[in-house]
Image 1 (cartoon, rainbow, N blue to C red):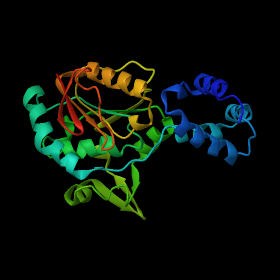
Image 2: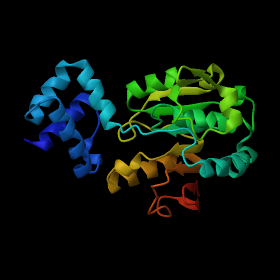
Image 3: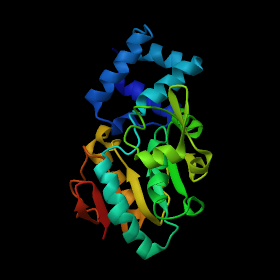
Length: 257
């Protein structure tokens, strides 16, 4: 393949996604398989295709924003949220918590948050801010149709209450959908919202370089209220959490000092 550096610049101009912030070997391998799939012999040829074919462009963005998602992923960590963190945050901030689901993918996570909170407060008091840089996955999230595998970990009572079977898929209820506001947002480029009680960002930063991770965790810290909680994925850790202004509460939960 030809010049990857030039390709990264072209991709940034087209999508505003900075490939330098992703682990190169991993990302390059993924991109090369896509370039080959479209029978392009060089990166610049693939860029021409991205510019001329909307479907190929959408596929590429979708491919870059790695979307492996499921409801209540690692159920024991969600149980901990429900038993410990939600009551604790409500004691500080009241019933209407400000929660941000960052890099929310196809909506599994923000909708899980709504269901988890519904054990504590009525749905009309729940508002989740959910963002992703891929408008295609946001569109999927807004539709709210999921496979049986995707919702396998949802507690049985909540599954019964909030999902309707449609063929072999499951549709999430409109009352849950109403609790989530979806927006496009690029973690590496856009301004962060502020004053949040909790930020949930799981299994996304594993693809970032260490520098990019540190930058994002520092920005999350600024976006949280004092005592706010950051909930990360089961394969992740905030290595220099003390320097970044966090206290580690559990393996995947960090509190802003």
